[in-house]
Image (cartoon, rainbow, N blue to C red; front, side):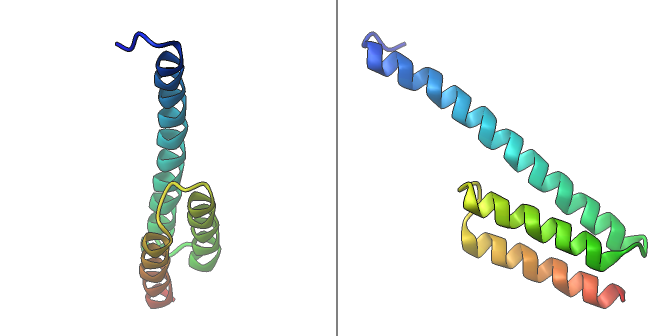
Length: 85
């Protein structure tokens, strides 16, 4: 445990940031799973893909995932969505 006041504050802030990042990652994974389900069930694949792509872009802007990771995820989802049509 830190003894210096500023170090104690950094520990507390790190907990806050970690919780925020975890919530954002969880939301991203949920939107990806919903998109995958819509594609596999024959639902509205383009609309599901658009929502998933938006959530991926938000995660990139917030620094949750890297832009190359986002591009890879969007590309794979697009392939699946186009194959489902």
